[in-house]
Image 1 (cartoon, rainbow, N blue to C red):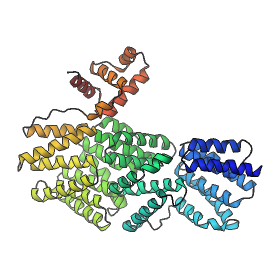
Image 2 (image 1 turned 135 degrees about the vertical axis):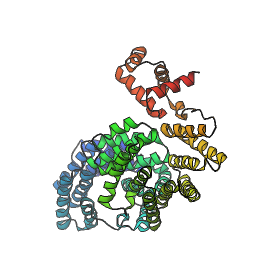
Image 3 (image 1 turned 120 degrees about the vertical axis):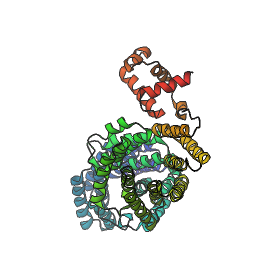
Image 4 (image 1 turned 90 degrees about the vertical axis):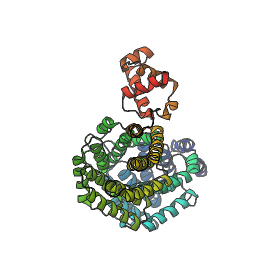
Length: 514
């Protein structure tokens, strides 16, 4: 009988090894129908993790712990307890429960399972946020090299457990996102294609999904970024305030890039004082022509933490932009030079690029030649790192700088920027680029985003009705659907097209039909 159970548990782990999570879940569940087998419960927890069923995963781990204790298996019991440490903190934001499970794991390890002392140290550092040899100590090159090595080993199958690759991937996205190393994150995402194809997406934590969404946002895949950010917001709402604020702030930044200011403001309601959302709040104030408010919010954050931290680069750059608007270009230039030095000292090329971009703006009125050189260098870095929106914004800044000295070059840069903005669905930026082209004497009718081809047949039908001026209730009545369904269709259309409201969508529909 024991050998039969072992064989069936083994079949579950074989299914896991091939990425067949539903098959693994069913195999383990069949074993558990006859009794509480710790190995099957741990396997079931792993399968539920990959299937995104987090409550079932937590329940399976708790059952695994109880079953292992009942069988007097301290190693499996400690392993289950240590898993619960991480998941209680990461998924639930419940530090008290995490510490409780850590204490239980520590007692078992000390008394019965000393071979797990390494894992216990890792769990202790995770709960206490005790810094280890990582980028948080400023040793960026060393930390990034270790992350690269961990990712190579995990994706190469050296660890034999896809969950290890998932944890390494999450940590890589977190560090790269917070330290502006989008180029490295993008390269690892490309390397992960085969792993994701076999096992599924490893970004199942709310915070991991947020950082993954950030990378997708920077790469220009705004539809997929929106999906992950929306999921992260739903997962963290009422559970982990910090993760919820981070996800909401990132989605608000995406909305602002799309030119959808009011939607961004709604996403940020109640989060105005959260540090995780400060960049979005500051960007919203600048978009509303409120530079004093933006500067106050951003300066408060810099003063509270200090300007020497890599993860404050975006805050510092945005503060400099607010100061330029307020006429303090010299102060902004000083911040830009400090940002360049900070990035260079830690080998963070994109932080250097953001500093150069800010310096180019700060010097535009007093030293156009130097400003152009700084913007050109920033543009090259953003282009090489495949950050299309920021590259296009830099092109537009160059066009404005060059309009007096080189009309043809200014027009070429503005035209190239407009094309990218249109493709992305960055409505406000596209309007600005088109307006500059008209000032330069170049015809620049908005052609609308290429995303129009991504609308479903039903969404194209709804867009046509929006173009006729129908309200959501009228659309629902015309199509024999509920009002809620009509509202959903219209919201998806606005999101896909990157337009700011029904009026802009109606105008696009009119151009399509003409």
